[in-house]
Length: 471
Image 1: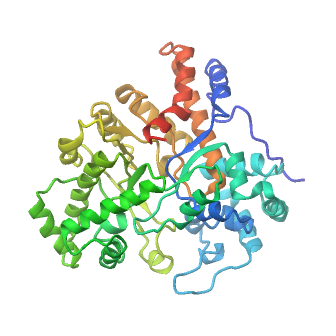
Image 2: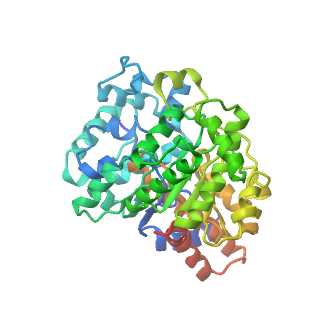
Image 3: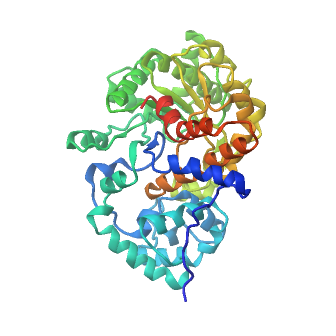
């Protein structure tokens, strides 16, 4: 007999009975609040066309790099999971076989956030009542495929069902944003906006950087052979993104380094990176300077700035060469903030017109650097547990290491940062359970009254993120 799939109502809440009782009451007040998803990587084409999702594997497996990296670590090739090589080489085309292979390895995800999120998707979204395992793989596939054919499971219907109030995708500065414009022209009331990700034209080590600078000039009508024209082109693209709904920018730099160069030095540096004559030191200095420049532009135009540093992108060289970017081979590295951010903060840290949200993959910096910085500078806010740490324990660690110094109101609530659309409500549910549990512990320890905890639970689930991202 198949094993039943049951989600316990107290999952992730405190074990201690008094704290659990408080957490239940807090969670009951926030579980159904609207979802604000201000930073993520879902495909805007889903909402522009509103076409049915093609099959269970294409929806739930192939785009999810959390799943890809775990399966790859255990000897499952990306081709076997339906990921096509860049050279057009063969890969598995049968989605049922991909699903069966995934089910055969489902045990690998025990204890991981992916298991928590997907069990929610299976149970709450698709009404499956038995656990995924090899013997139930075909039942899962057939059941999910049948549901995906229904109108209630098209992208816009799911958007409404999930209770999403606003969802931001993330696009290159060169993207013409046709899908966002189509969404707005359609009259659909769902709020799907873009976010400005300038990395392809501010990181000299980004693939094809020189050609992208030329393209930037062509689409803006600015002379990007000159530093002044380059800055004018960036301002033009920021305006274009803001006109298409963007309220934020996002910067995925290798480090948090910032610099504040004079115009002549910056122009000379730009000439070297433009011509492909820059050293690694030059590239890092240019990225650092451009973070400060972007902060200044955010002061001008009001776009919220996000900094996601500290990932060694595409660490697996052969995998990157074969499949391209974002295939699960990014690795966290040690990241320093206090010295790195000082040039930017000297210029803009006290300016209340700037909101700079800091993220980290280096948890050792929470108490030592990030909480003290966010707890002082008016321009800084601390982002939620990110990527490798957007897990129950990662969320608890962030609260325990930062609250005493930064408080709650120098943080920005939760964002899901996902490509996996169906996991969005699952991820927000986890965050709300963890925050309610943490608040409940403060209540039973008599550090917080329950009415204050109830107000905070709403703020952490909804109010802070809406305010921080100006939504």
